[in-house]
Length: 176
Ligand SMILES: [Zn+2]
Image (cartoon, rainbow, N blue to C red; front, top):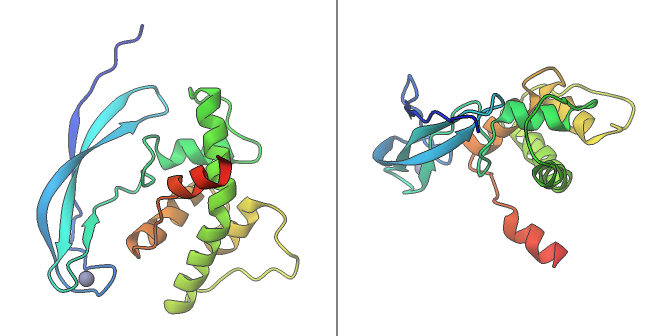
């Protein structure tokens, strides 16, 4: 069996990031470990700062660009699996693959709604298409494009604006 090397990395933003809810100052109140499964098969432990807003008291965690909340594999791997056609060189078992596809199918409409409201709030341009988008990817593509990195470009603004929903409980009640 291949030996896995585990290393700890501290994740810190270069600049101080304001609270995504009220834009006031965030203070560091601790950290937590986060496992990162890489496409190479390696695993790393990241140490992520836990931050609290001094005004609205909401708790935030710094999310590195390459991660998706609540997922151990990084955004690049998940994106590769969901791409059309999908990447074939990713060492992930079948049940994880079907879980991601199901998650994406359920999540994409919510994600599109989030990107829509973020683009309105910040007055961002959206690619206008006269045709109705055909696939889930094209739905998101209107906002973030479909070039490499679309998963990360979708996840970051949603997580940073505190709109991320942990959907596991919703899935469970739908499929029991
Ligand atoms: Zn706040």
